[in-house]
Amino acid sequence: MCLSIPARIVKIDGTTADVSVGGALFKAGLQLLDDVKEGDYVLLHAGFAIQKVSEKDAQETLDILNELCNDSGRA
Amino acid sequence: MRFIEEYRNGDLIGRLAETIRKTAAGNYDFMEVCGGHTAAIRRFGLTSILPPGINLISGPGCPVCVTSIDFIDRLVAYSRLHDTVIATFGDLLRVPGSQSSLESERSAGADIRIVFSGFEALRMAESEPLKTVIFPGIGFETTAPGTAVVIKQAAAMRLKNFLVLSAHKVMPPAMEVVAGDGANIDGFICPGHVASVTGSDPYRFLPEKYKIGCVVSGFEPLDLLQSVLMLVNQKNCRKPLVEIQYSRAVTPEGNTKAQRLLCEVFESCNATWRGFGTIPGSGLKIRDLFASFDAEAVIPLDLKSPAENISCICGEILRGIKKPCDCMLFRNACTPDNPVGACMVSSEGSCNTFFRFS
Image (cartoon, rainbow over all chains, first blue to last red; front, side, top):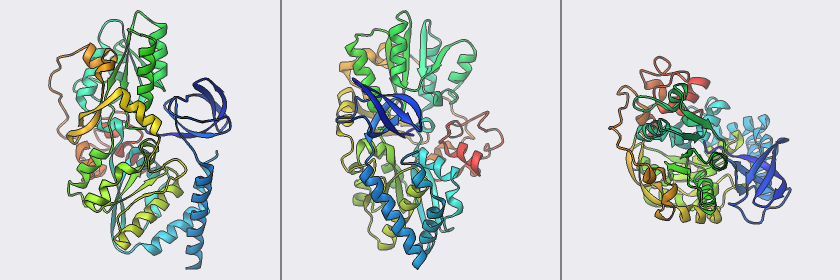
């Protein structure tokens, strides 16, 4: 129920945006977020963008995961 | 897809599971609170690659599963009113009430339509002014801000035929009940999408008051395994903390704009949770300022006391005390095609996911 999907903002029209989820287009209300722009990734939930997805933090998590897994190889 | 596939890397999953096996020593009981986590854990078979000492227990974080029978009974009664449309998320359709479900009422001719967003219900009310459209507000802090936006929009449009029946709930009070319930939880995997709105700060009471660690987790296999590893490390070091694994979407303070909108439209109230009874301060009630959109205020009903199937153990399953296979109805009288309890209805319910993936 709380499922949210990362979606890329394709086009903004006032408080609504067209967002792409793997190429499929959906409408998303932008009322819950400030400062979003086309190209940003947001979490899409029940017709609303509820949070921005941080590319920097996403990469950091992947770096940490790679480090944890390399530790397992060396151990 | 971005932010999904990279967290499903099979090679990394195998190696991370190996790291967990080397780090874990003894027994660990962790509760994944969110139904989305339960579904992901079962769907990706994560329990089969974790060491046997790590026990993952499903919690009360599936909004459909904890919806009270009384709420369904009320919707069923509304659906029988003349010129009334129930515009609902599909998840609610098959949840059994005392005597009937929305699905049965629809078969009998009631006007019940599935929507994917509250906005669709609002547009329906706008385009069909002779009908009253009732939107059942279910879901936690992830979903409730959207309902708040829709109610504000209805007020701005001065709509007279749009109502919300709110069963919106907040997560921390239910987790506090579990923490104080003697369920012996070593750590909580906290709901990532709820926390994308609320932030991780509302969970600080868990380590501070109950000495239970928690990690706010994402929903992909690598997210969940990393969260398990973080909880194992917390228990090994005896240092319960609030940590964020899902940092690409969660901060300690969360989405403050969504929180403000939520508070503008809703206020805290006591709420009934299936399996728990009344939990103080766990519900969201529409404020008096917006009472003309509150179905309960506009169309009061005098309902009979709700009746629950006495053999159903959904309540104990939701509290983490029993598992679906402990229920005599599971796979027999209760299946996804013919659910008795709410945990078998939702695709995120424990019984439904156990049925499909175990």
